[in-house]
Image: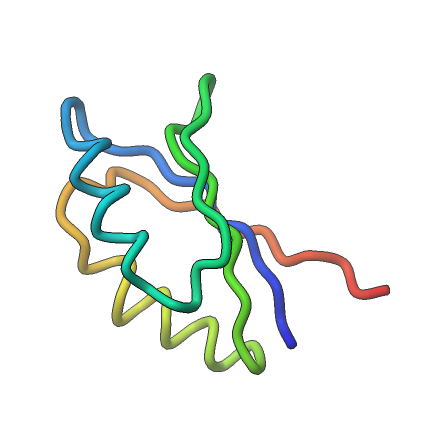
Length: 77
């Protein structure tokens, strides 16, 4: 299992729309609204790194209202 965190910035007044859309994806295990540099943090789990890449490209980047995405891979134990 591969785990990553997405740090997302949204366009003004689009936070609620983005959060509602992202909450529909089964790959997103946690989705939190935060204060500071980012607006949302999403915890994602998939089978492997290629699956993460496909998920981000095909389901996240196409979402309207996302201004920027930073991907952070969790360290393996």
